[in-house]
Structure formats: structure tokens, C-alpha cells
Image: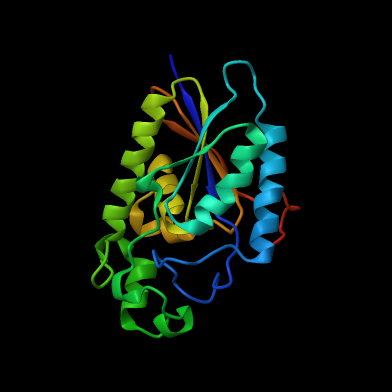
Length: 213
């Protein structure tokens, strides 16, 4: 029975990581540390995913955002592949919250809903968490069907990856904020005919207990 290994990669750090909610605003590129993360990921994944025969990485997919494509580029290059854009891997549409400081958003009453009951929250003028989860899981399901018995890499963003992992784990969306996905981290899910199996979450290649870069 066919199964597909999906490697999720969060893009590397940007100048606004941890400071603002970047969303889908254009023109946000990797910082110098983010570029180092991308090159490190490329080296790490090219060594960790060479086979076995028939299990080589078949494709590298990325969100349309610059920071995701810039992270995917050295990975694809190291594997002798090209970057394919998959719109379903895109960042959540944060609407009017796009670009705002996280410190300011944390003062809003709605922030508690974002953290504790995200399943009922819709960003003003934007997407709901539930729609985001449906979007990325639908995209991944489609990609899995295209790559039976193969490995694929999906470069995306923190919230979409968290939502995809929550779905794979059977975890309610209201608990997905308990999953940490740091910049430049790797998570892995094996999609089998019976059910998905979560193999790795937020792996940075750092010693146990070390905070993600």
C-alpha cells in the first residue's frame, strides 16, 4: 500500500520574525540568519533524505511568499530539483492585522481568542484559522496523491504547519497553539493508507532543550 513522507519546513528568520505579524505582505525576505538557516537546512536534508531507492525526494514545494521560496531554493538546489509553488501552503491571510506589532496585538481582547479558541476566530478582513487548516490539509492531500511512495518537502509558515500537524495528530484546532514551529525547523508526517503518522515536530538539529533559532 502506498505511503508518502511529507517533510514540512518553516521558512528561515526574517527581520520581523517575533516582532510583527507579516502575513502575505510582499517584499519580506530572509534576514542574514535566515539565509544561513536555509543553507544549513539544504545541507541537512540533502544528507538525511538520499533514499532508499524509490524514496528519494521527488519534489520541493513552497508557499508563494518570498521568504518561503528563498528557503526552498537552496534545498531544491542541493537535491537537484526545482522549487514548485503551491498556493495552499501560503501564510494565513491576516487581513487588517497584517504587519502589526505582536506586542500591540497581544493587548487586544481578541488575542485571547486567538490563543485559546482559534477555531472560532477570523482575522478582520482576512481568513479564519479553520479555513487555513482546510486549505493546507487539502493542498497536502492533493500532493500526497500525486506522489505515492515518495518523499516531498513543503516549505510553509508557522501557523499553517501547526494546523496541518494538529490535523495529522487528531488534535482539536483549539489546541494547535500548543505546537511550536520555529524558523528553519523541520517536521515530518508519514501519510499511510490508514492514517497519518507524525514522526518529527519542530526539529532544528539543536541539542535537546535548546531554544529554536
